Length: 495
Image (tube, rainbow, N blue to C red; front, side):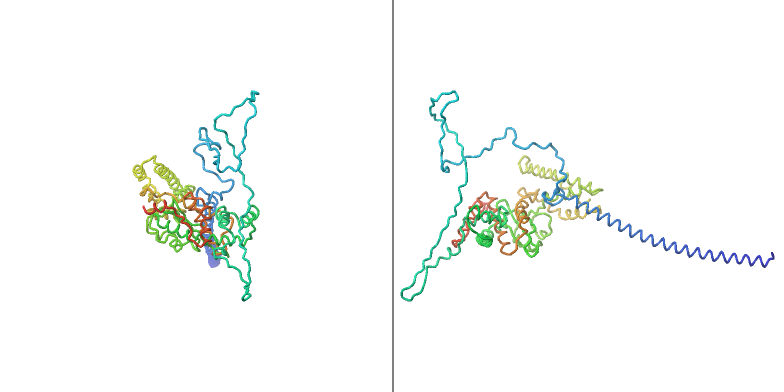
């Protein structure tokens, strides 16, 4: 092969190599572009997986929520819910050895309608020679309810004709009589059935028709509730003003539908001797301001933001905090460890307060011993807020309200929990579950007034039906309702 041919062959091979190299470079660029696309897709998938993991963790957290680690009521716990381990074995049901007997008390002799004398005829030894002694006889009473016969007062308005002009006339009834279709005791029974015992209107109507023997319709029952509501308007305002003037009060709220699928809320403001309720459309600060309306004492609430406007002394409920800390302790990582420490401190703090309340620990010693746990709680809350883990926002929110955590440690009259308001609201919650709220403004006013009267009478140890009867009688006679706040409560308020 000559030199020129060899050179041409090399040039051809070189051109082929360049073409192959260009093809490889193009393929490499395509592969790099594909790798970049896959990298972007992997990043998107990783972000999606992270979101899904977060969503699954949130769902698992919500699924594990129960009455121990959230504000859910115990009735919402599933049948197989795990109960906390008992420190001590559960005691058997029934009375304990050595406890004082609780026997059924006998009615006084003047309440006995019929007395039957029973005397022995023969001694077990066979002798019939018996003599009466001065020993106190044994008494056994059988109590029953006689058939109920309604008391019916009929006003017969005879018609007369005037001999002079021929006009037909009759004597008109007084207004206090015309307002009456049912008496005060029957109105009180309706209030007890529908406002205290959570009985549905149809069941209450069945009781009145069948047990009491009084013909009444659903419309008549609703009219009775309207009369009761009017009779209790003044006592409701009296109780609300009284509680707003107390040095310590508890506040809480719960949902209360108001018909036509409108949301509503039932608010309560209560103290140890009275409880006032209000049905309002909102759950925000406007409703809370209307409820408090000049209250200047120590306010005990949960951490709902509607109360944040209150500039006075406030105590956050440690029963709610205990459940929140329990929920934190069930998480993993740093936040779970912080939650477990906060749960242990909460139990210790509440145990010390119970001892101080029961006077097994002096108030001075209590204040000295609670100071280290107070500092430790705030330190743990700050650490949890700075952790950046899911759930750290809860620690941050509690830490930002730390000045409201320790009012009970500075004032021995303040309670660390809002259990009083929770107990007052419980009656309304049971009512709402059976009635699904109210359908009218008149019904809402009846709810707040009857709940106020029943709760206040119960706190004062007064007869609810007796007060309802007296209030309805005064209303039918055109008089002011009897005071719902007793003289002892008024004196305590003045002091």
